[in-house]
Length: 70
Image (cartoon, rainbow, N blue to C red; front, side, top):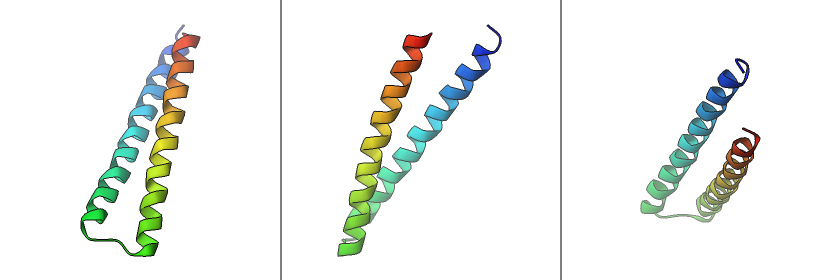
């Protein structure tokens, strides 16, 4: 039981960090959008949006799987 607790706490901190990074990407995209976009920047903003979507889906699946394992 002692081995599980630190792993769960580490996993929770990792999930929190990744969500924070995803939110930072979203903030960057919103700020950049206010300045107007050229083609390259628009492509990068699209990449950030896709990265956020995939990241949130992966985190949701991981946390669901972790909850089922406990």
